[in-house]
Length: 257
Image (cartoon, rainbow, N blue to C red; front, side, top):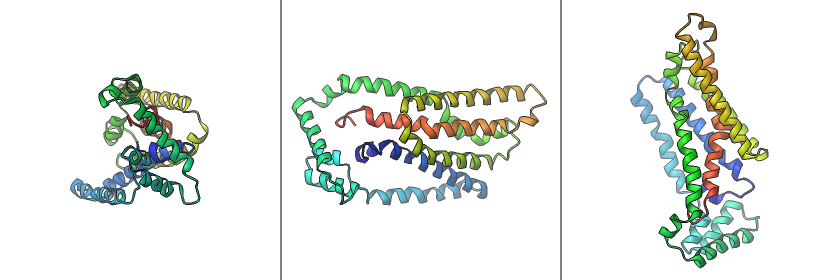
């Protein structure tokens, strides 16, 4: 939400990939710790460090200009835009657009309940809500959470403790590439391609698991689970979750966001 309100429209898609990049970096940090540190308690304490850094960083983040205008703090909103865009950028046009949006909202005079019962809220909510439900139902997060267990139980030839680091390394590289992909690729085709690739990866993983438990010749294919998990995480990072997050942020008007 914050990204949608502070990012310039021309850069909103590229900046939306920052979440994927940070997720990949955090995952690498966690799995590398898990590889070298045996105590889960020590790992948990190490995870406090990025949490504290996040808390401290928030103090230096400017408030959203949209939020400031909503609160009637017009001068602060303009100053926030100057901080976000730079002193050499003319913020007057963008600032006036934000103010005009607030005036149009006030002219409608809708209450919170009326807004939540309106088509402006309800239609995007149904679309995005259904998409988010299906996304969770697809089990992408489950594969990520049980990655090590998958490698162990599927009989993968790759070291189960090292494989997640490799997966997250590839994910990080592709998260960086997604910044440029979203600059040139239409979002709907990108989402559909990534969703199809995730489905193929999941189907391949399930097929391998079934065949490996019904055949003694699965040793030569021990790399398949790693490739499938990399596929799920890679296409999730390149365009799947990024597009969902951007659609979530852009489909609702400012007053509802």
